[in-house]
Length: 347
Image (cartoon, rainbow, N blue to C red; front, top):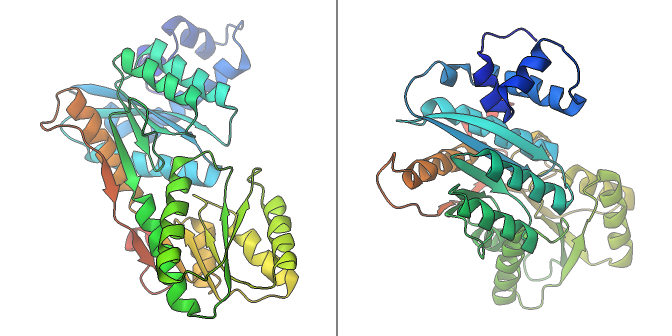
């Protein structure tokens, strides 16, 4: 891969030794394919971040560790890279560790690798597991601040959380569905992932508490999809509809994906979904919203969240004044008529 970058720059981006990078670039052999791939990814990252590489001044290496479906990971990556040229006064370079539902020990190994290699900060989306919390502790001991993104690890030594106010989002979903369904609107199907992410827990608590207050008689049918695969979810929703003729609406708590499968399951069953509230304006949800399959999407400014995460890291290192604190994004209720301009540009 052609590139204009010094070996030392590529080595820092990849988190490898200069000797290893030199061996890969000169095709001397004796290097695992996974290491070769890491070097090529580092060069690709440097290409995308080339405006940052040219800048001078204090450089912060930021490691983005995200456990999420590829659709959401790609959105997070793009949002962070869009903010790197805007974060001042420091220069940020990002290293990416993105995986879809990796085993927790693999995720912990990634975090421990960062602790050994060194970093100025970690932005982390991960399940609330004791093993992950312990890994965050080791990062803190190594002097590496951790900022949780979208889903929190409140018992860990993270320095701040940035992202959606998940309880408020769940409460907003309950309010909207109650307005559309009224007194005799039937049950709400609530779909979510494996149940190990604190963000989805908070959404569910906000939703349930608001339904209990506004419409105590409303039934909530919970569906947990442990696989994250659309075909599996479609079958689970179809089974739920067959078992419960009272289901009339859906609240999807997924960070990304799955909603097309739920819409298809209603069609399979010959049932009408009177109202459907989902999260995040990825390409799938935007298409469903435009087609009238989603009633509303609860959205937040992911780019602003990541800019705030960079600011927190700078505050920890004394490059910005102020005390690091958590940042809760406001909940945007998006309909087909008020899609944010930046989303339309990206589509």
